[in-house]
Length: 172
Image 1 (cartoon, helix red, strand yellow):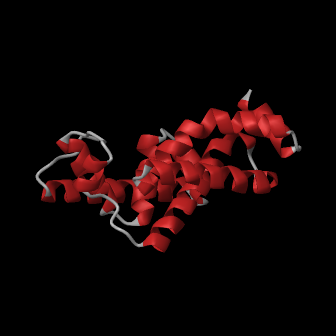
Image 2 (cartoon, one colour):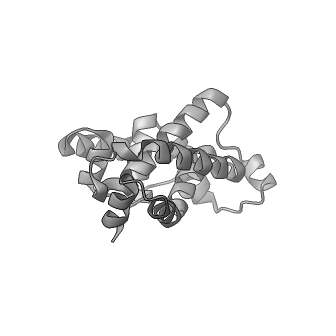
């Protein structure tokens, strides 16, 4: 069903495109929020991504990877915003001021994720927060599956190291 909607959207069906955006808006929001750490900015990111996706829907090569394509656009947008703003991404005071209650382990994990390089953070987000398969990640990142496996292994090692520095652990 999703692939037919994607094909219809590629062929210019605006209703199909809107249905797809409705279908994936939660995934896009979670991705934006995990990068931007601000609900309002995450909502603005969804608006921008909707516009960008609409303008470039014709570039989708494989309808079955539409979700991956959308998330890739979101990640690129978020990385651009972070570079543009050059701000502190995670601060417990800001989180408490926003009323976000998270347990200590979640904060440690977020801190450790933010300490990773962009590629490591991206690959871990795609794999563990969006449950994408190695093949889908490889398609999204335009690299071989073996490379994704190597990067994922290195990212997990790095994340474990960051957590151990803080006295936490990672059970992945």
